[in-house]
Length: 249
Image: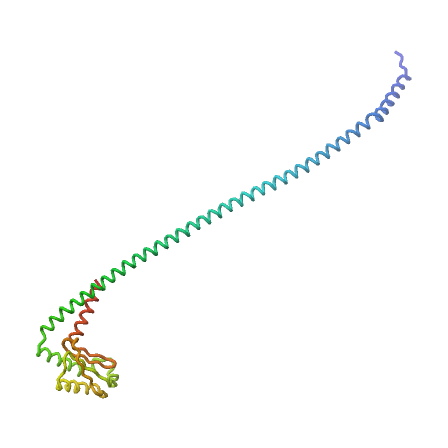
């Protein structure tokens, strides 16, 4: 088989010529088109990434805004609940206070009525006891009893300095009144003056007055001290004791 080197060389030359033509007419435009396409794809990708980031930012902002709105809604609801609860508690407290005030007022009225009734009862009982005792003592009154009461009164006057807290102050007394259930005789008045002169060296004129309310007995009135030897004072003491016992019971 004969090999034609000319044909081989010619084919090689034709191949390079075709490659050159392809490079000039096809490869470069294709590569350029591919490069442009790749650039457009990258640009589109960048724009898409930017849009995605923007979308993510918007979504995050939306989520944050939604959370803020939800938090604000919860805060508003909680505030509203708190205000409603406080208002409810305040109204209940006001109603309870008003109810308690009315209850206390009602109880006070009852207590006042009770105290008024008890006071009136004590007063009536005391007055009744005094009236009964007064009638009994009046019925028992006699000359002998009057004389005994008068002697007891004189004994109290003679022991005056021993019964007062400050005997020295007693010596300064100047004004004296003697009240009796009846008008005293001159001898009785003298006996009283003699008894007082020993106890009251500075005493002046002694005033004698009649006080029928004493029922039986006498009373000495000084500026700082009083001596009672009479039925009225005795009955007053009984009335006080009865009232105190009723108060305790």
